[in-house]
Length: 149
Image (cartoon, rainbow, N blue to C red; front, side, top):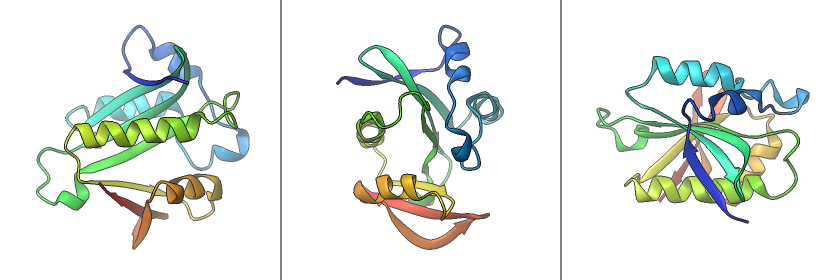
């Protein structure tokens, strides 16, 4: 399986906006359409990508790279990460997260930060398998996890 991160543009935005998680997962993540609007409103730091597996779009991710933030622990965020409901359970999440981590490393990130709700056990399990750990802090009602690279 070949996983690629491709920037969101006019050629793939509509398809990305159609991707969705399962109904029970919607409490954990904003829609891709809302996320892309948020990225436009934060264009100085947001980076949006479609996740492709063997040339087919299967998910979406959004990062925050804050070049102005002096705190290295708060500079690089994995803001969104989702695999379409029809593509879950096929190993795309694990493969995509590995590719996401590679992207952060290649762009000189030293710590990746993310947050999710404590009840999001599937996502937490995946993040823990990749070495993310809670730092004891909260982001509103979500726990913060960090991965040192």
